[in-house]
Length: 196
Image (tube, rainbow, N blue to C red; front, side, top):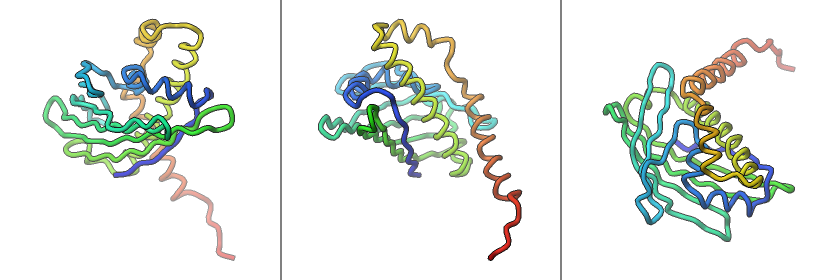
């Protein structure tokens, strides 16, 4: 399943690209994600906790940075993992391309997501809504962290300050469900418009 999205960051492209050089810092912006070990050669072990409806999954696996193009300001990450309780697997290729947008930066994201097991039971709409919320939260957290780094705070200070305020998987699941319900509501309850 291919999911595309984009977001904007108020800082210049070079500043945002430097932030993308620190993969643990980038990963910490994604709700529920945590890198647990640096394996070297741009490869990491980590885990991601997600909750979709009544299903709570904890994936452990690896993430490889397979492309980092300085000139094109493009980074590609391959990630794969399995649920710790054996209820499914996930594999994803995520590409992010940075470009100037006014004084800030536009980040275009493409995700090629493959799910099996419990997470695969949800339709494309729910998974797309879930992904949209994750990207929105990721971009807001990244914006905040870049601003704090520019004010002189260290990555450790920022991580300690954010440890108690991470977004819970349940909250994301509720927001995704609300988006799906609004879509259904709009489809079935919009006022009738006769053809002209």
